[in-house]
Image (cartoon, rainbow, N blue to C red):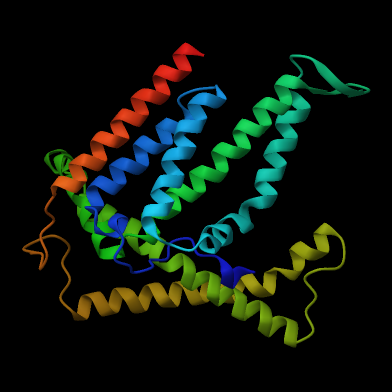
Length: 267
């Protein structure tokens, strides 16, 4: 299952979404998150869903990639739905067992929260699926460049975030290999009590941390060998330039966000 996780991966393509400026795509993602959580009505939420589906079509990426990104989070999603159904007791009561109630408001809130989380993951995944790590680093650095006047290490921060995203698939693949190796040695990760399952993970976590630190040291050594000194005297081979399609996409996003706010106010 771990090898199917696609979080942080980049899938090259020639779609319109791939061609958009990375700076604008980060802004689009932030506005999209606001669009999802700005209102409580289903009509307002529907605008955010329509925006995400439209972006998904433009990306021309297979739907199975997004299903893979959702699978590891299904237990958290189910747990969130159950908590909302149990602890929100306002509205018409459909079922009651002792102190526990299943009400209309509880179900409504649970459905809205589940839909928000699902489309939040899908929309956020689109950013990394259609943007290379180098473009993402440059975009974050450019957007945060005003903070340089406050002596904030913008370049280091952007590089750190991008490396973290880049190594998520690598660490997942490493974890899958370690689990397979431990199973070949007779380790059992599925049976037993919760405490037994937690103890069985120790032979996995120790070599995983050792591998992660070794990779970090190798990366640091490679960067030093290439005379990497942060953003001091650093130039870029490809300069980021906005185009008409970026501004058009920004206008569409702004209109849909305004529409979501207006619909939420009306309903």
